[in-house]
Image 1 (cartoon, rainbow, N blue to C red):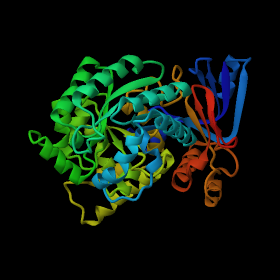
Image 2 (cartoon, rainbow, N blue to C red):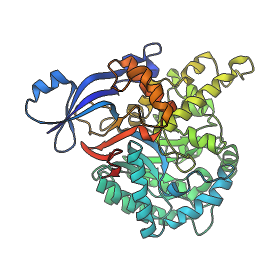
Image 3 (cartoon, rainbow, N blue to C red):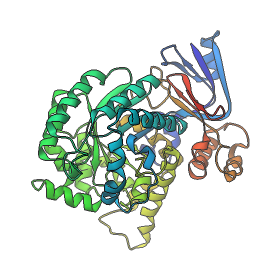
Length: 469
């Protein structure tokens, strides 16, 4: 066995359930010890003096002057868009035509896909992300390469063929029958093998014919334990196109409901323009939405109603996602920065001009992204939304030992001066100091704050060594 000693912070509950006392959802040990067995599973965790007494003889890795959190979870990212992040291009649909479809087409070639996927995982680890739910392309070779590379690195991945058969160039699409056959083979070969899980992945309802969605529904019915990952209500033009293509449905969510896709392992990316009724139906179904603030702002899609999604009467499970390459950063720290700003922008409307059908004072309070709510959302909250909280998300005994080591001094020159207010050059000694440090990192720092990333109890990235394992 191996032990890691340092300052640890994780979550044991949802901070949105503890308004006024978010610390009650948080666990912090200024001097903690995490014990991991040779499988990479956590076998003990707690204050150093207590845990070390139970394990008197073992190797200990000491991590000083830093803060250790569970590995970040990215609930919505496009692997074959790594090279085009930050590409100039208007709003969603014209941006897809100009940048996305041509670049993703290159991933139909295995050699190109292998290089791109390696670069993707290198960058993911350098950003502190250890689990992701990801899109690939319409051809199975891309998903195959992703599963292979994730297995080589022993990383947890949810992915699948990203199916599209309409509203895209012919050289980019697949057919419903081709998709069904290829997906069935990939499910048989990769789903539940190691740390890999398969997601039935219609790209979005605007790109899916009734035949393609029927094939998705058939796959889900035949393999009920697989995930479903797609887009929903990202952009007004997209929504209008969906309702024209699927004119027997009254809203976007109904399209997926019609084919039996909405349930506890369903995730719809974005959800910017979801109605109150759609939020309620998602909540009742146990389905999830991914908040993608970087992408929503970059492409001008709109402001996600975080406070509405976290309504305790109709709580919708949430992941946060970078949505690379619509999102222009891999780092979940940057995602949290932009998410905070989206919440604040929503709340500026409380000056009397607010549309009362869109927001009230209680919703405004829930829009406020404290450091507790923020880091819960990219750790335990993301795991709960993806139905992976029995495996990852915090440091509970029996879970997989994925974690990120944050250095409050890493980032632009101003960050060290800012974080010194709380902890100087040391790790935090109180939960209050740790929360202030995390807020400073997410608002002033960037991925340079990620000093190390560990996967299944093994160091997979070291900033100071400048490499990825």
